[in-house]
Each structure stands twice: as structure tokens, then as C-alpha cells.
Image 1: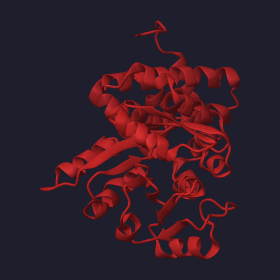
Image 2: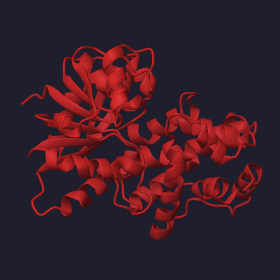
Image 3: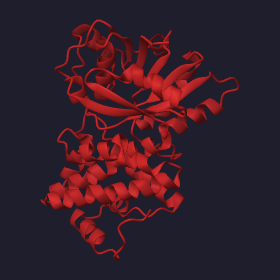
Length: 340
């Protein structure tokens, strides 16, 4: 049965872009904002002046700061809150979700304390309840800057659920004339791809900030993909997922696009700025900064060699000089390229 109502939880740039996409195709969308004044701003101006200015929002989009109101009667819920606040918001949301609701994470991160992906966080929270609602949990990922989606630029992404039937229902729900959606079943592969690409993007920005060329960037993207794949496969993902939209597609976009917040963080690091002052002046979250710590711990736990991740971690959390980080990468012992 087609679904014509949805809730988007999180009114940042990406959440607003997805809410706009769905409302523009005729879906009645409730967009939840954490702050009441932010919801009021969106309602008054029909525009998210704070995080996605310049894009008018249609009448089928309703902004609210009430979680219960946001999801009332909604069978499709899209989670777009930062990874560090994801668990708390989902926990508050759970009592208001009805059976057979589809909950899709469009968040690209790994929880710092537990090293869980967002799908794993949702599963963990459900397991804590005596009588949990019956939910369909999935993920959306792929090369998709919020501003370009809002501007109706042709875009392709993928949605993954444990079963093909679930993925196909979500595929039909999100698909739009200029937003093509592919179905998949490798949830963990897509989540690892989406989270770790941001770390490689920081590395790409560092190299650009140091004044290196496109040779360097191409090598970084390729080898970054290799180590993301190593970790993903160790965690049960399908290797081919990493050559798809969530893997290679998202990696190329965020490592090369000027709209990439993570690349901008790296660019400033490469120019000699300190991470604390870079983060302090940002209005929107660059997920890769926090994910670098959790991914580094995850790689240690899984005993997976990830040299690019290692150097980004050293730069951000141990104060390593960016130029020295590059020298360390290039001085490593020689390897064979293909490992699978």
C-alpha cells in the first residue's frame, strides 16, 4: 500500500532537504525541529533560514517541535539527527511509534561510546523494551548534498533494509523524477560506507590545504575506499556494496565537492588551523570529526589496518602535524594493491 504521510526527525539542512523532496512529490510531511523557535521560524517564513536558506517549503510540510505530534499517524519516519544525539531522540520517539512503521536512518555516523551504527542503536533501544513496537529499520545513503537535492539537481541514492520487499517499498516512497533510488539489503555495508567516507573527506581536505594536487586526491580516495571496505567486510558487509552509491559514490562526492563540510574541516587543518577553533565556528555538524574517534576505536576492536584513518585520528585528537601525517602514510612498508 502506498504511503502518503511521513515524519522527518531533524530540521538541519539534510532533514529539511528530504522533507522538501517528499512534500514536493505530494507527501504530507511533519518536520521535527529540536527547538520550538526553529519550528516557528520554518512555519512563519516557509523556509529554513538557519540551515537551508533560499528554498521555499510547500504547504504540505508542517514544522513542529513536538515529537509525538510529528509521528502521529505516520508509517514512514526518517531519522536525520546528528549521531551523538540519535539515541536520545530515538528513545523519546519510541513510545509514539505504531506497529509496522518504517524507520529510516539518513545519518552518517558511529556512536562514540558503543561503536554502534545508527541501525544498531535503534535495534539496541528496541531490545531494552519489554513490549517493543514492530518496526522496519533501514538506512538511506548515497552522494547527495542537501542543497543540491533541495535545488532539484538529478541525484541517485540507495535504501537498504534486511529484506528486499522492505527495501522496495522504501524505494518507491522516496523515488522522485530527479531523485532516483536503488534498493539494497546490505544495511551494515551502507552504514559503514556512509560514516567512514567523511573521515577520508577530512583527509582529502588536508591534502588540498597542504597544496597537493589531484594525483594525491585520487590516490587518497582509492586507498580510502580500500580500508573502508576492509572494515566493512570484517563486520559482515558485502564487498560489492562499497563500489556502489553509498560507497564509491558518496566517497567521491564528499572528497571533491565544495559543499562537503568534512572536506572543509580538512582544508582548514591543512592550512594550519586548530580543530577546536574550526569546530567552534561551524553552524552545522561535520560528522567526520566525532566519527574519527569512534571509527578509530572500532578499527582497533576489529583489528583492521586503516592507515588513513589512523593519521586523521592523530591529526585531530593527538595534534600531529598534517605534513608529517602525509609523510608517515607514504613511508609505510610496501604492499600488494588488491587484497580480496
